[in-house]
Image 1 (cartoon, one colour):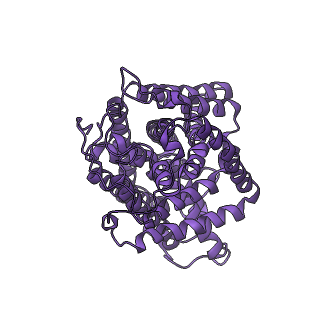
Image 2 (image 1 turned 60 degrees about the vertical axis):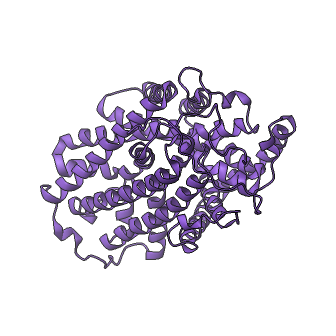
Image 3 (image 1 turned 90 degrees about the vertical axis):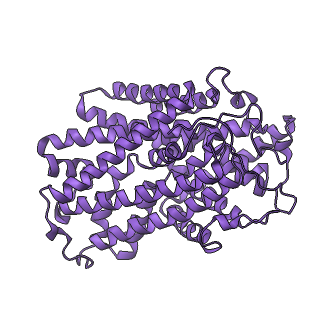
Length: 469
């Protein structure tokens, strides 16, 4: 049996069922983005048809990626997600670069960004100094990290509650906006024709796709919890697909409601979707109502990030590629508490210094590149045929790889300096990887890529444990 296959005696317990795993997907995706991007997309695309087309296209791309990640998670049902798949396909060096970026900037940077965004909306409800807002952000990170460190049952229960609340609130907004709101259906006319002074369609669509793609980002993090999902070969593919489909439909509904509530000429990109739709629906009190929604949304996303991301550091430590302490399981709570603490501490430092926004932008292109590379692994031959798990194979993976390459090119073109620095930081990880390999006694750290029929046969891992759903 290949390293990592099956459930080791000291593996994390399998507590997550379909509902809990789907909640992780929804909780990761529905964050700050949906409350910021509709107004910017509406202003640039200047047409309800092209706005909905951008969301639909981004949703289709994400669904193709989710189908591939779901199949990979079912094939290799261990914690670590993309790190595990890259390690098996390309060896430890490439996998280490992914984890290196995740540990240093991407995961704590997104965590810090969510927390700071949440604190900003807290500030719109309660007058707080900038220092107090930082304390709110850091406090939320540490509190939710503590929840996830105490136990997966508690963390997954919180995630399910937050995900249900976020989706419920967005659905209420959509239903209220369509059925009882003060908007007008005349705002949809003309449906496809754009004003003569609108930005060129190609440029606007590129920006709209980028905004929609990143608003839907995060669904892949659920695969990092594969080692803690019951019956993962069936649960994870369904959870990933269901989560992405549900979020895409809700996003389309919410964007349509926004267009109905706010005429194009009154769209203000500086206020964002939340403030404008809130005022249109509920008057002066609407800003407070929507600020509360955004706060709950950000808290749910924070909980998901702090639950899923540390599993990569945990898996890498178990493979001898990170310090062994990060691979330790808490003797009482049965969670990778130290790995969770690392992410929380780094994210808190980023919030305290206020530099996380710039740092995160350096790695947007790198993140997309690693996602596309992960999906490429489904084409690598194995000893057993498992590609039937991916509907539409071999075209479905291309439905993610090709658009991801386009998004990557657009991101590099938009910010070549920061994208180049991101690539340089990845390169710094090469000698650090060699350092850990030389000092590690774990066989996984020195393993060669599994690209031939020597790959271990597929294992079905239906481990014991109650379902947190």
